Length: 287
Image (cartoon, rainbow, N blue to C red; front, side):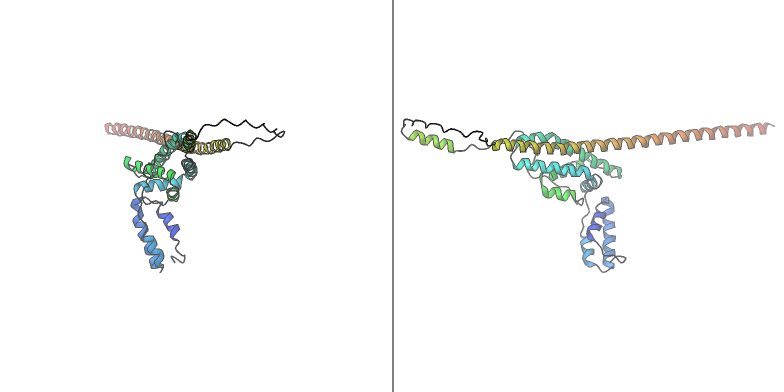
């Protein structure tokens, strides 16, 4: 126990991975020492084993913690992309390509801004690692789970060869059965076709079975619409966040301008008072 309370390693980990990398090690060692002092050697060992996050991991964790709604929409987009990959639906994948690129770019930019607002510079290399982490979360459900937990220690990499989307719809291999049947027919002697049997009268109002292809197309359209909606929602939230941040910067600049004007007015008053006093002193000296 620490101060009479059992140490929850998960709670400690959540706290530590919300810190900047340069603060992580000291805070981790301090929490491990407190647990060890309280006789909780297992918790102390688990805390001491927590790895310091890289700058890319820190920015990614910050994004997950500060923008939960955008993260949820991004995870939905990833699920839709993976469904389209599994079903070899190239048309659906192409429809999602623009949204995927736009959302990854917007979220990576948001992560960079959040880190910089915390006073942590983000280089181009680190920004690229953040983008790669986002692409990995789109491609792999395991990576998505790691990323969305907000405890990354290093950036993630998408699977080898993953681009997110093929440029053309995949072509299914043609069945060999028609070719074999054609060859078999050529080998057999030609026979006179048997007279066609008289058609049986159809029952009145027989329901026509719905082709499974049409049902599959409707399902594909519905999934595509859901994925596009999730992507659009993520884009809207990213744009709203950018607007809010721009408004905050404008408000800060306006506040600084007001303070500068106030300071200028005070300086003018001080100058005027000093000038008056100097004149009075000069006049008194002449007298």
